Image 1 (cartoon, rainbow, N blue to C red):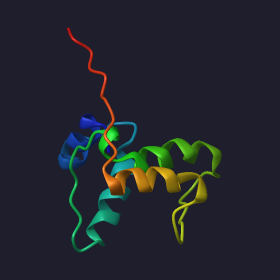
Image 2: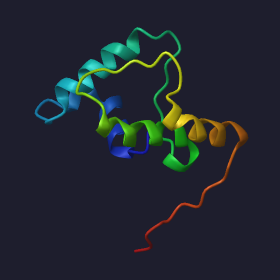
Image 3: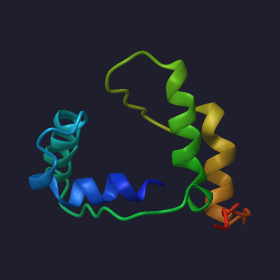
Image 4: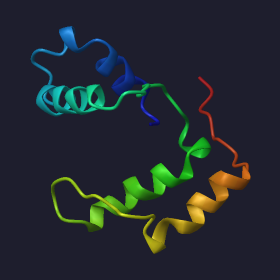
Length: 95
């Protein structure tokens, strides 16, 4: 995922009490516990184009959980790019 804040929230579930996303974060945490080898870490979107593509494509899907049996056709190019290590620039704001 490309959100440092979200990773921090997920790592500190005890502190999210009144956060608007507390219920969803808790559900994600419960789901992660079902996966034996699950690790949460920050990854820039340029390093994981498939997830970025799936996230952007999710706006066109119905609400709720969506399971794919295989990579959707509209995301295959992103998967190939990730597999072969296509490099992408990252724009960084200098303050």
